[in-house]
Length: 166
Image (cartoon, rainbow, N blue to C red; front, top):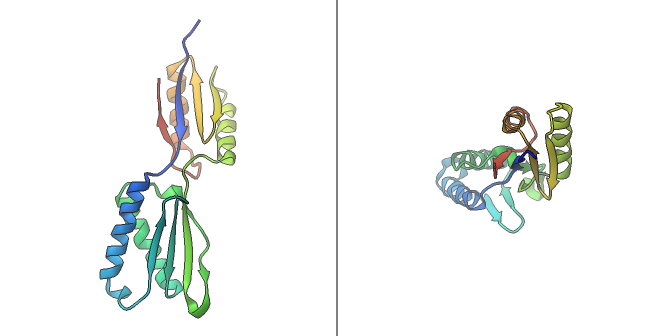
């Protein structure tokens, strides 16, 4: 009987790196000339895996989001895993926005990935959903390498990470 090999497909962000990026963005906002004498805030809620942005107006909110994206990119946090909510304009023109962080593969994306792999008709490749990650298994390691290359080439809306290859 052939021994099966497998790997796991998951997604997520390092919350400590996000915290560091938010702190760096706060420091930059405190020193930037276009943010002088303004009331702009960035709050990171680790439990909810969300960042709340608030600014004096919609333009500054966009600038705040741009600074946050830049800091996250420099810290190695995948931008694909950001779930940017719609900007809300409140009283006196104040802008608010919540940016969520995707920590696992949601069911819709998992179904799309499973269907796409099955449509490729790889021989004896099986894909199983395990909570918020996928396990791809096959007796042939070459087939697993092909599936991994196929998944890397596709745009799934999240940054896929491959691990536990055995």
